[in-house]
Amino acid sequence: MTHTLLPSSAPAPHSPESRPGAASVRRARALVTVSALLAVWIGLGWMPGQMGALVAASLPWVCIPLGAVLFTALVFARRALVIPLAVVALWLVAMAPALPAPATSPSAADTSFTAASQNVRAESDAVGDSATDLTGTGADVIALVEMAAASRGAAAAVLDPTHPHSYHVGTVSLWSAYPIVDAEPLDLGLGWKRALRATMQTPGGDVRIYVVHAASLRPGEQSARDTMLTALSDEMRADDAERMIVLGDFNAASTDPALASLRDTADQVRPTDPSLGMTWPAAFPLVRIDHVFQRGMSVTSSTTLPAGASDHLATLTTAEF
Image (cartoon, rainbow, N blue to C red; front, side, top):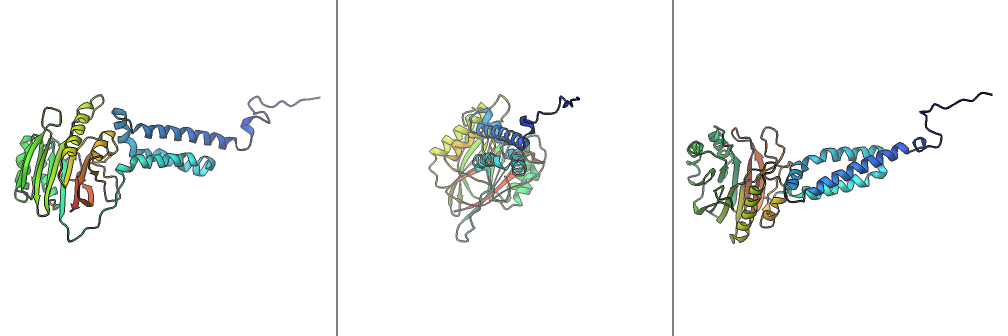
């Protein structure tokens, strides 16, 4: 009598591996694990400090692995679909400050006000080109930051004819088509000046403007930036101006926890076009670190655009009051 032996590598007839649906269960478990990891990563974005800043910078791109998980669950493991859907909901909540916003319809009866801002890059020798491009937008106010003293003359030659009112603090400059009064430098806790505050006398009334270039964010070096942003929010909170606009390079992604205190005192302007308004690097924008905040006005449009040879895109915002 002969006996046929099963190959040692073959699963036993009733082993878990041979049960119908075992592969589907394994896929579902893998999807739940990946979804949980993505949820933890998203949740870390609310943590102040370097971890929150890192997650905030990567948060828009979490949609790529999240989309892959969602698609895989839809095709191969529908019973696990609720888990990635919950993570999508969490991601949308975390992304709220960065998502596009509907614009207010312009009203002919109200006063329109357009502000442009750009980090023109200190080593760039094409500041005049940035000024020319931004003048072409028709902006009433143009703010330039990270501008070397040697470049200011090139910008002034372009901007002074159309924006005769200006104020300068270190590498931060403001040109306006409207008279500027009560202008002053702000050190925002650093001991040197990287910001300014001024009042513009527009036909519709005074508008307070802040122009800021926050300290850089580098691995292990975050305290100076956070100090500036906290001090800026304190200044904004104490400011009783009816209308306010705050713009510049904040060196913080849209959802960075360091911007939370600013959002408590003014509205963070979100892009009104179908984009996330990424501004850096200009060649292939990956993160939005140039922002606009406003109070007492209605935003009718907000977008980004290339200007000059800077590594930052410019922001262009129109509001009315």
